[in-house]
Length: 114
Image 1 (cartoon, helix red, strand yellow):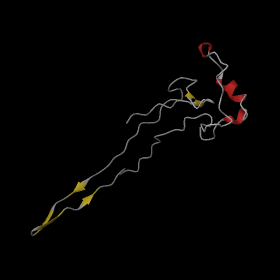
Image 2 (cartoon, helix red, strand yellow):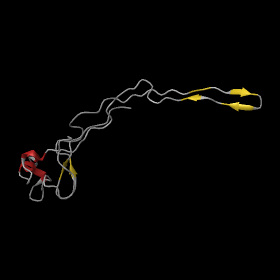
Image 3 (spheres, rainbow, N blue to C red):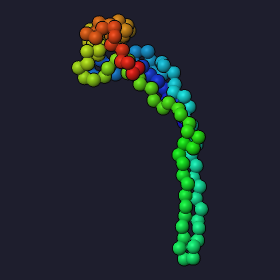
Image 4 (cartoon, one colour):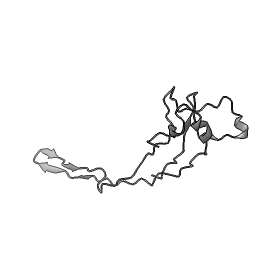
């Protein structure tokens, strides 16, 4: 599978996530690969048939990140790190980092999982 886009999401007081840097600003996740194997064999024992199977998933233990945490600030409703866009003219653009620094959490509003 091809790597999915990683997009920085900033949460507003309305509970809406915005993409202030545009879609895919943080790059892509790496390509995901996984090798599975299925081996089966029919064994006849008179009138009774058995079919032993061996089916390992991720045979070579390939470890690829499939998800990166996209939320720059906390997304819980009522979180003190949500930005308020009600007084912002969105057609003129805005400095989301400045708005984030003006929240009650201030500068450390960045979610540590980001």
